[in-house]
Amino acid sequence: MRRTIAALALLAVLVGACGAGTVPASVGSVAPGASVAVTQAPDATPDATTAPACVEGGVEIDGVPARTFCGPATADLTVGEKTYNLTSGWCQGPAGTFTVRIGTFMLKRTATSPGYLEIIVDERYPGAAMKFNVEGTGFASDRDTTTVTLDSDTRLSGGTFEGLTYESGIKFSGTFNCN
Image (cartoon, rainbow, N blue to C red; front, side, top):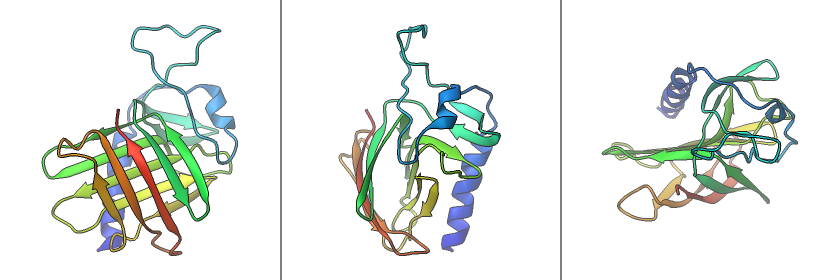
C-alpha cells in the first residue's frame, strides 16, 4: 500500500513535469546541501543587479529531466542532525487534500541536485506521504510514522511535520510556510 501511494505521488510529479521552461545555468552547480534561492518578482525583468526569475515547469539540469516549483513557500527540514532551508515553492489545498512542493525534483539525483520537499496529506488515508532530497540523497516517509500538523483550517498558511524515513528509519522534522 505504501509503495503504491509513493508511486502515485511520483507519477503526479512526472505528469506535471511535462511543461516547458528554462532554469538558470547556475542551478546545475548548486553545492550539496545548498538550496536554490531564486524568487520571481511579479513585474520585474531580471538584469545584472537582480536574481534570475524562477521558471516553473519541466527543465533539464546537467542533462537530467527535472521539475522546478516556484512561489513563496519555504521549509526548514531537519534530517538526522542536519537542518536544510528550502525555498521557492507552493501549497495548495482542495477539499480533502493538501499538497506542498518546494524546490526542484530531479528524476535522477546527483551530488549537486538542488533540494526538494513534497508533502501530500489526503484525509482518506492516515498519516501523510512525504519525499525529500537533500545533498543528492532522496528519502520517502514511512506513512505510518509521519504526522503533518497544519497551522489553521485555511490550510494555506503553513505547518509542521515529523516522522521516520521509510527504508532507513532516519528521524526527520520541520516546518513549512506557504506565504
